Image (cartoon, rainbow, N blue to C red; front, side, top):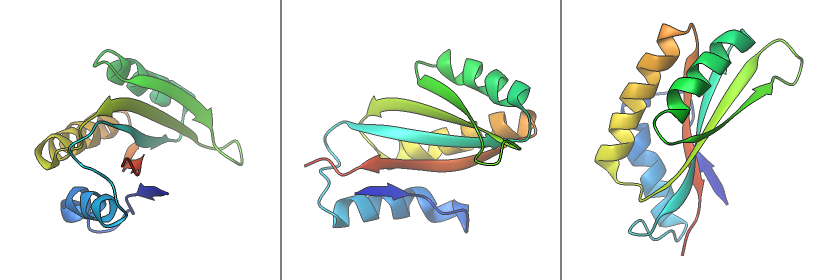
Length: 113
């Protein structure tokens, strides 16, 4: 099962995602492959953010939107999902996305037992 953040009430979403992972049986002391998502109107912006995030040790991919009008950047990193680390990344990624006229859409991970 993949648990993703919604777009509403971002302040508590990192904690909510962790609670949902735990509720679904995930061992939060083990590393998880975590997907982080960004959305942009231009491919140039998506690629600029992908480059910045890749420089921080994340694997990144840029995708064209379903209707070809938008672009998404997916960043992946294997890490233990600690609340403080996830909140720090959320703040950093929101800032990076905003600098490139985009939106940080949150993160999710598969349940790890």
